[in-house]
Amino acid sequence: MPVLKNDKDGVTLAMIVAATLAGSKHIGLLPEHIKWQLNAYTNWNVSMLLIRWLFNVEEWDTFLCVNSIGIYLGFRTSFANGLDDNIRKKIKSMGLHLSRKQFLFGDFIVHTLPAILTTATLVQNKKRIPRISLTYALTLSTWFVFSQVGKLDASDIYVPHPWKRGWFGVLTGMLAAPQLVDSLQSNKKGKLLLVILSMIIPYLTTSLDKELTKKYGFEYNLNRLKKQKKEFSKTSSEPSFLDVRQ
Image 1: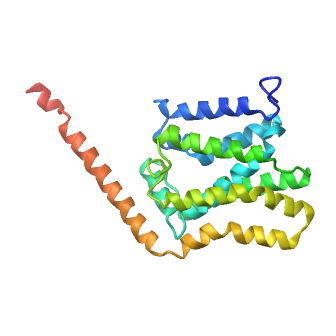
Image 2: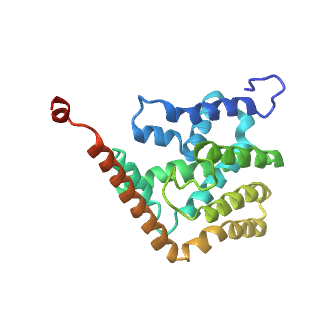
Image 3: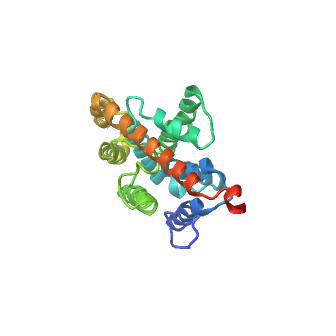
């Protein structure tokens, strides 16, 4: 479903969707947790997946697979050792209360399931991932983070996390995606094992570093206290009704 006649990869439609989502944070009528959800890269990917299946945009299949696997591995690496619970707490502070089980279920739906479904789609349809799909996925993911916070560290969007390790996970997942699909299609068990082992390196090296939990847990709590102090100062500085009357 290309917007332009010669746009065989559907890039134009993808950029229209991305630009719309990028501007959604300026919609003042939306609740804070909805605006935050619309400006999380994971949900950009989910939105594109929904559009792909609703309008049968098959041109996106390879890009979405690379993107979904990159997101899956990047998230697992960035928020290993329970750091993901700080996201649940942040969402709670915006007014959306989720239990740990509810949060984990949502995590599976938006992070794990897209990687499984997009990979299965390519395997079933015997599609290979061209190199250009890696370029599209990496371009969109970096454009997202620079458009939202102006740097590769997306802690301001989410919560403090080891962002360099997270990007290592994203890149590893994206680069491994074509080999993963190829090994599944060709039923090459040895190659599949090697690909999986290479993919778990970012997560494994991060999860074994227990100091990261203390470091980023402390940073999260410190940022939360700073925000509360700022909000309190702002409230205290606003003139009350009685002050105006006097």
